[in-house]
Amino acid sequence: MTLIDGFDPASPEALTNPLEYYRWLRDEHPMYYVEAYDMWFVSRFEDIWTTMGDSTLGLHGREVTHMNTSQLVVHNHGAVPPDRADQVAGFPSVDPPAQGTLRGLVNQPFRPGAVGRLEAWFRDMVRTELQDVLAQGTFNLTDALGQWAARTMARIAGIPPETAPRIRELINDASDQTGDPGHEFDPTGMGEIYQLLLGIVGERRAAGADGTLPFIDKAISGMFGGRPLTDAQIVNQLMSPLAGGVETVPKVAAHGLWELSKRPDQLAAVRADLAANAGRAFEEAARFCGPAQSFHRTVTERVEVLGETLEPGQRVAFVTASAARDPREFADPDEFRWDREITRTLAFGQGDHFCMGIHLARMEGRVLLQEFLAVVEEFEIDEANARRTASTFQQGWDHLPVVIRAYRDLGGRLVRPEPRG
Image 1 (cartoon, rainbow, N blue to C red):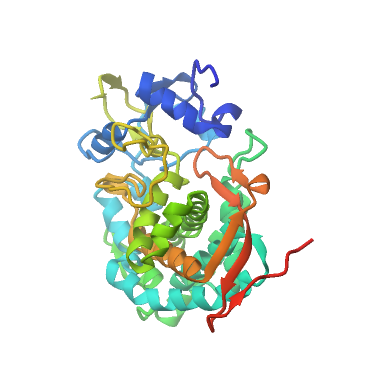
Image 2 (tube, rainbow, N blue to C red):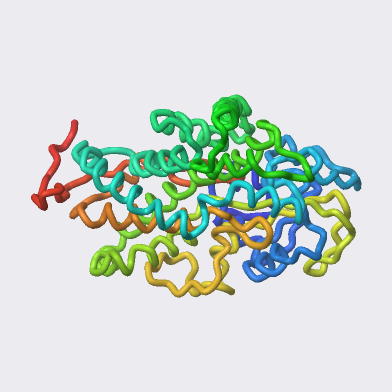
């Protein structure tokens, strides 16, 4: 084990093996201060659950829910950044109650009823297109699952489906720090997505925004602060849910399938009743494999938190990836157990910024596991060539080569793809 005497989430060591550092934080420094960022890191499940969900503590978005290193080294020096509601910034960086108002303009497609109506379309797409993917014999599992998640978000956002692969590529590249700990967020790619959405919002407005595309139309017809939103202000609200919907589920589902493949008894148990078990297995995958590392808040007034005095302008990082491995909440947390009883989860955040895409994520994850395991009889992950994103925000196995040994075609016939190379 590495001798740990400090923590910097952007250090090469922490990027390479964050779980070891999270264990150190939980056990020895559950409320840890990093002077370079003037920032506190909270690492235990109960502490995050209680503190992140307490709207009375004066910990707000104010800046963004995740900041890169170049932003963090610029301190506020006691000044509290203004609430960005007046700028109609994206809702994740706006304080309540304005945050809830802006979020409500774009959240209709993510509500349970809307997600339920989307499931048949999603399942049919996955079931049909999966056959061509499996026929390749070997492919990047994360990328294959990611194309369907990206197509779903494209449908929700009115983006041409042929653009979905490019959207996924840009979103993943934006947060990747692999091989270069000094890499920072590159606005070029996200700017391309911003301009695409700006054009779609303009088209919807010109066409009358009749409500058939609620992700955008409701914001066009809605009001904020007594005024309609501009096209740019609407796009500000769309960027975060689009990015989250494209990036997270594929990493969780692909990694979850890998964990099951390493545990034949668990894989067999899930297969025994996919309709009942796939959703539960995805829930454990969201805990064990969830890519989000932490979420940030800004201190708006002097406050006592977990025995420490936090000053205005300081930042707080709730390290949810650490909380997911906290033995105080989960027995044997470093073990993957498909049927684990999970009574509380931080995989989708907590409090005012709780992920509004939870219902969509759970539906997609459940269907992806169901459809893959329903037809794939034998598969294995090429672990030697797997590649993980290293990032202070989103980590995960972006490149997860899978070898398909045997699968069932739509007629039920067993197919053994020809080995490549």
